[in-house]
Amino acid sequence: MLSDNTILKLKEAVGNYPDFPKEGIVFRDFFPIFRNPELLEDLLNVFQNYIQTHVPGLQCIAGVESRGFLIGPSLALKLKVPFIPIRKPGKLPGNVKRESYSLEYGVDALEVQTDSLKPGQKVVIVDDLIATGGSMEASVKLIRSAGGVVEHCVSVMELSDLKGREKISAPVYSILQY
Picture (cartoon, helix red, strand yellow):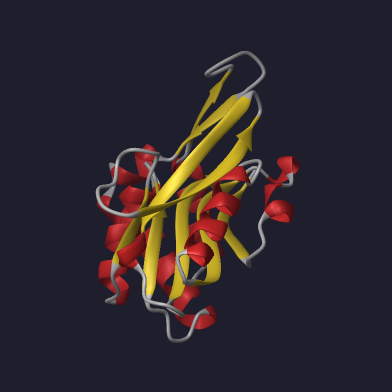
C-alpha cells in the first residue's frame, strides 16, 4: 500500500539544480532514484498500485522518449503487458504515425509504429515529467491515431504551476508535484 512516507522518500531523493539549464529554471533530477534499488522499486510499486486500481484491463504501457523508456519497460514487465516506445522522428523503422506539437520556441514531433497497437487496446502512457503538457498530449493523440485507447497518463513529476495537465485530454496521475 502507498504511504506518505514512500512519497516523501521519493521526493527527498530528487535533486534540485537552480539555474539549470538556464537562469530562473530549477531542474528536477530524478536519476538519484535509479541509483537506489529500493527507491526504484518503490517508484515502480507506486505506479503499479495506481494502475492496477484505476485501469482495469490494461493491455499496454507506452513510454515517451527518452526518460519514459527508463520506467516504461520495467513497469510493463511488472504488469505483464507489452511496452511500446514513442520516439522522436526518424528513430523507428517501418510504418509510423506522427504527431507534431508546439514548444516554447518551435515545433517538435513524436512517432509510434503503426503495428505496435491493436485497435481498441487499453494503454497507459508513462514519462518522467509533465511540464507544459505538450509532449504528453501529443503522445495521447498519437496513440489514439494508431487505434489505441489512452486510459491514463502517468509521470514521476509534475510542475503544477505550468498547468500542463489542463492540456492533456486523458486522466493524469503524477507521483510528485512541484
